[in-house]
Image (cartoon, rainbow, N blue to C red; front, top):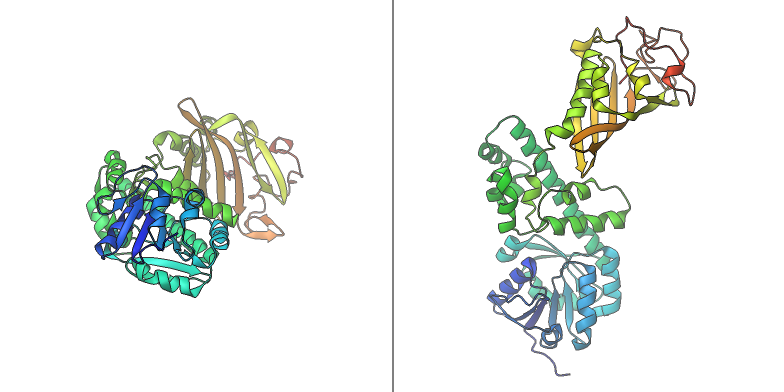
Length: 442
């Protein structure tokens, strides 16, 4: 096999990132040949229909592919055309285990170099590049190409570089979701979107807001289309990266569902996730009925909120207790608690996943604070609460009995001195609340 020209770079993968990298390197005076599976031509560089042809012409091969399986497929297809000393630089975002396998198989000529930044950073040469190689010589040979794209930040090994990239994208997802929640609150307050974005540009969300201002200013119905037309990093790509992180870490990752369940085209820019509309009134209706039940003491609101088969469950006096809806409704006397003006309730989160949803609510009732977790289902066009579990925090009198010291009966909604339900018993096994207390269970 003849030795390819030293200055030729093959870019395999001419999607948004790959095409911008190829154009940047060509603008820096390098000979660039590109390949993409779609066969889509690139304006700035010459292309070939065969990855083997591209690899055979280059001394440095740069992979800019969607994921690990795509890298594997292309290398299996074109690997035989690699010269013995051809450097393979991989800027693709892959799982750290995949990065390790590639490094082991390609050996000292492999440089794993995931990047922080997208198309605008490529264009200006301001990418942050997490580069790792088992052979320092390979990294030094790749450095001139990488430095044409941004700043090289050495990592100890391919797995670490890959993992750090996934962590960076988790941070991005958190920022997108924080912006989404902020815009929803601003919309609820009736604030003009342009003024809100002006203020947000001054703070921690400023970078994201400034870079996607056009899409963020679009009306909600047009935001996804605006994001798709100017996409530099797509919802689908970010969701893929979060799924890789969740699988690798084995720990819960809220951002994965928050981004992945966005009701927008996966090819839309992440700005579409930030402008996704808040949950509609339909899913909030049973939660508001539940709040009205507490505010009025009228159990009819709970029957409106819950499915007839619902269970309300939690720990009372250290024992698990499960109520039917009828048993739960019997705890309420039909009038507000005496201290109702000082009580408050807040819906903290609602996450909708097709025909099911989860919700979290905080209730401040006197000295006690309750956290309620709801499972909701959509039956036809109507949402109802299928089940509720709660946790109670309050002034501890003894052990795990969270009750105000001045009212020993308030915790159990029974007159003082009456026995609490034992383990495995239901509320119907004991008397209901003291009608005069007005102290209702959450």
